[in-house]
Image (cartoon, rainbow, N blue to C red):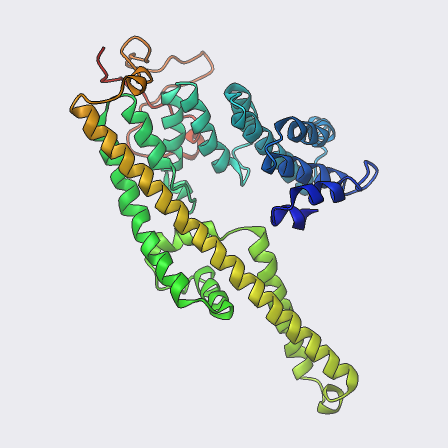
Length: 366
């Protein structure tokens, strides 16, 4: 079921996953994968139903502080899945609710922070959206990969008529990610052979890459997932086994059993190398294509900025802009008795991450 989902065969994946019954140890995993598959099938109703089957028992165990590490990870991924479903159907407040459940120490918290920025933007809460993006700009997330972040910032500032700041944000994208596109083109062209691509990946993850340090961090972040790591471990495991066989007596290696083991291990290793090389190649192409698409959006925004400055902006777009009657215009943020207010002075503190509030006073005029 998991494999069929990964190759886009959603209907067959769902059929197989139905065989996993509630008394199975794999039931919650199966329901989670079913939920993700329904999302891929644009079936929000069944996606929510599947995710709720996962949430009910895990939330109860969370309340009793009885979750193991694997269950906690599954719970956090399910919260993320629920948030994405509600965002996809325009239920932005519900999406934010589930994004906010993901704890700060979770590996998926940066994703939740970024994606919730879009939800806040949809609710015209630009101050909170920009606050989240400000968190992701901190050194604590230097290894994270969010190329869409400066584009979203640019869009928010555009709708507040801060055109100089729009150009500043989009210039950040241009300086950071367009060189990455050129680097990707070179890597893809020079490593068409899967074994060469695997060697390149090892150099990247081993800190031996000759690429620029910032580009290396971005590339490493885009290729840091379990599927790639599993295939790397398989290649290493078969290499170790072949090394052990090589050290055995020649009489044993020349036997029928020895010959069969060498052949099987060699075939498994070559198959894993081909699979991993093709997987990395496809991931790099996906990253390259994403950067190309985002750059098209960057150019469109700059085009609209120029039109807006000339007063040629369309009435429909102007209606969505933040006018002086519907934007926060106070000098400081309102805080409760349980909170402290600090003005950001250029220094990031870990306990402040996720709590930034970016005050935006619109420059749009009626």
